[in-house]
Length: 96
Image (cartoon, rainbow, N blue to C red; front, side, top):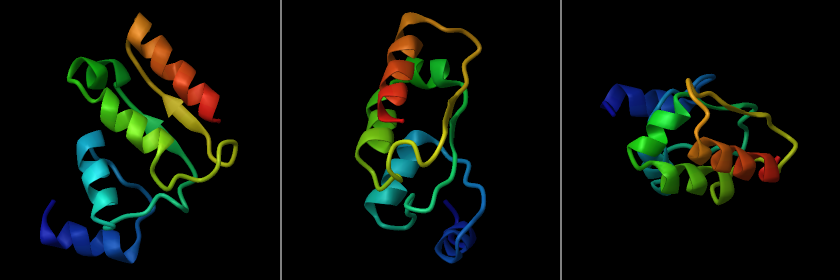
């Protein structure tokens, strides 16, 4: 991320668009927090899984400072619905 973008994050943003790997990095460095998140949207989840992002997605949904299950909706978007997406969708459903 660019310095200007990091400064904006520190002030707080309404919408953050990033890759799972970058988000995990930002969370681990305490640059952003998900405590106040109202919605989580995972777009092109099938492509993220194909590219090997499942560990990062799981870490974000399971372990990071997300609000308690049931407090925020999680949306999972995919052009296709292969078995891997169904398994991830099951994980997300179990956590909400």
